[in-house]
Image (tube, rainbow, N blue to C red; front, side, top):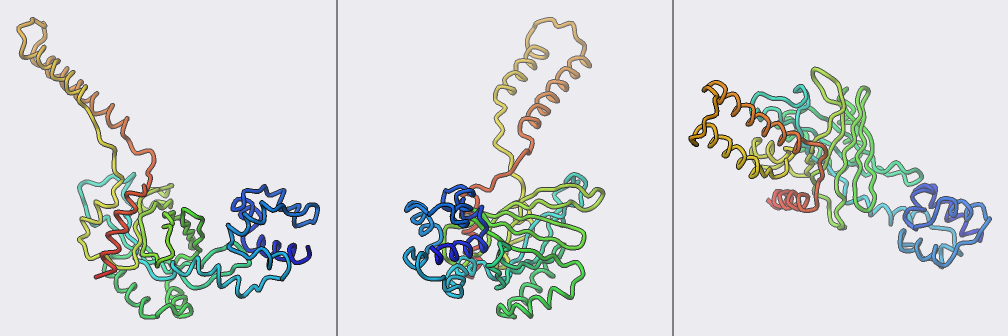
Length: 324
């Protein structure tokens, strides 16, 4: 069992015991017992290990892992994310998101680069650099410059190093999500995107970002964010609308019926209400105010979900942009 213990230790060092446990469906205590030699692995564990990590069980039990080959194989899970992405999101400096009108200038741009820089000896994922709060022209020019480096990690790192406000962090993944964790000297943010069930080159997608808002107050802020390897050739206003937090459809049929009956009673029917015109007007105003208030409260934003249907719509848009 010497080779098994050595190989399992290498695997847990790469992914952590918790991740190996989750992927195989076994408890962390079971993994710990295997590592300490207190118990031997069951056939089911070996089968799950093979499914989860695509390893040869016979070799895993008898031959020390060829770490370079193993790393290269698992590196393929990340290579589809390598590249430079333009980022579309809202400027969160407006107080509590309040703006006087549909001001498209609130749309803001950024750039992130997912580099071919992986350390499989620790669960840190892929290195990511980023710049935010850019104009559209700045972002598109920077994207063009970074793409000209043709994936040269040193050149990309040197480019970002010249910016004092640059962000750095990593990209990690599980079977369904991508997690991009970024920070600079004063800020942190977490971007979460759907992880497409594909081995093809990742084009980008719609996700959410949790960050600290700018402007009047520095407070927790969440919003939709869109990343794309290709600059989208569509108007700012269209992108602005795409990133809005959609409210559910509002059905006020019952409320409208009640309001109609109230208006009939006050103004149409011959029933004597004893109310003067000012009182009738105030009753209508209060009724409309109550309807609006109750609907706003019922449909107020509480959480946002990026559904598979929405993600697919954005994928089609990014696919069309990349094909142009």
